[in-house]
Image (tube, rainbow, N blue to C red; front, side):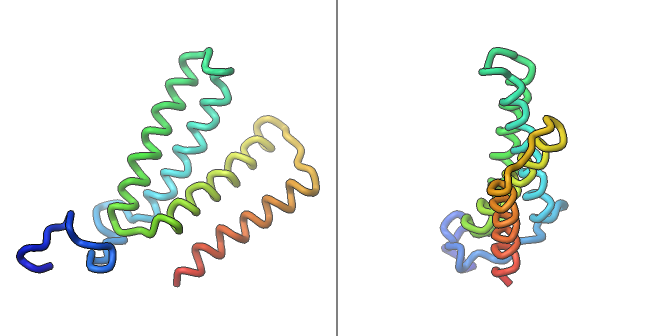
Length: 130
């Protein structure tokens, strides 16, 4: 960094790699963001159309945590496409699994194929960046 360049004016290309910056690894922050997102979605569903304040509060707090966590991931230099793709893909997989396990939802063959394709896609996004 030059003497006139501040962290805010650095571009992603000139910003140092901080994937392990801080006490919590970036991958763990991303995993926590996924857990928070799925928790928020479960709370939103349980709020029954925003009529139950307890689950609604859980949803709001969980979505706020998701935003804060993914913001930290981006601040560490993660690419938006990869990090957000992993967040939403893993979140969808986790929410689908949760609905099968907790609610007893049954996936059709087409839905199962879609879940498998999504899982492969998430894996490809993660592996493809190396």
